[in-house]
Amino acid sequence: MNHSLHRTVAKAHERLDRRTAAYLAERGVRVSCGPGCKACCSAWVVVGLAEAEYLREALEAHQPQALARIEAEGPKRLARIARQKHQPDFPTRYFLENRPCPLLTPEGACSVHAYRPLACRGLLTNLSARYCVPGVVPALRGREKTAYKAQLKPWHGPEHYLKVPWQLSERTAQKLWATEQQERGFTVIGELIGLIFLLGQRDFQAALQGGLEAVRQTLEKRRLLGGGHGFWVG
Image (cartoon, rainbow, N blue to C red):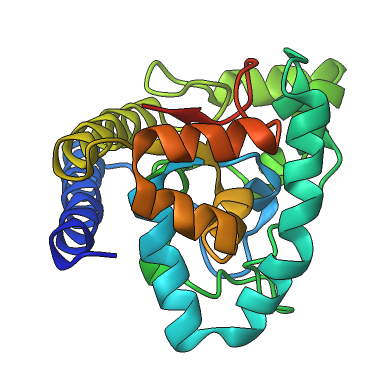
């Protein structure tokens, strides 16, 4: 990863953290997320190429065990994308399967918390962590459902997550992708674990050196492009 893009990703993370902290302080909202709170880590996370490179560098330098878990899980993720990328409810169904991210430690903490993607940084709540567990909110009934809904405020959404931090993370990611397109000439957007895995594969490494069309052809060969949940390059 070139130094300029590395710095750009780090600045994007810092900017989002700063803006999120300012928003929470202004609202007087205290998030309930903390160490060992890992339910949202079963979500299907989408990132751009620069963030995936940034995270892989951190794994190679500091977390070889986590990288080994990525190498084991990556082919499974890519195979699933190739099969199910056209299914509209795929991310929801995946989340409900409650498959923890391979970046988690045995204690349930993120092994690369300082380098985590924008999508992870923007997912916050101030309500009980039990609502984040896959399947809990849809299963609420009666008084429990009424009590849950009574806690929701205009600044929540979707569900009990804080709306503004999530919106900030999305806008920051879009700006990062645009910057990468200008600096590299293209970007790749796709599922976090699969993309980190790809960065260690010779065919993808060679394609990155060849440019946009070479990357497109490599992803097409792996049947990863297209569909509502496949990879995108451009």
